[in-house]
Length: 99
Image 1 (tube, helix red, strand yellow):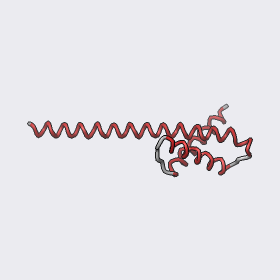
Image 2 (cartoon, helix red, strand yellow):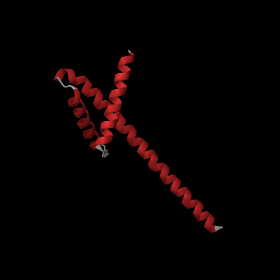
Image 3 (cartoon, rainbow, N blue to C red):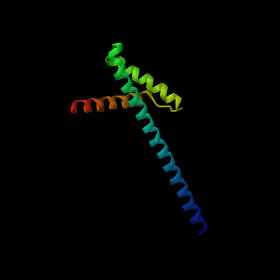
Image 4 (cartoon, rainbow, N blue to C red):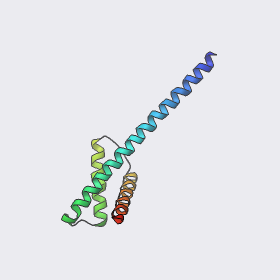
């Protein structure tokens, strides 16, 4: 009977630990999306004034996102940052087309 209890406690501990890690990852993804959204919106605002276009806008948004993430001590790969920024730009373009 004690063995069953130990096994059940071990499984419960594993599941709780897994849940906590998934919640932390989910939280980090939300932070990344918010930061990247703010960076993209900022770049869109200043792009016209500073004559920034195309890849230069994307590069600036990536740089700003990286800088803000580092202040939160979050490490995210360049590929993920680029994908999130592309996703946000696509979404904002779709929203702009609906107006």
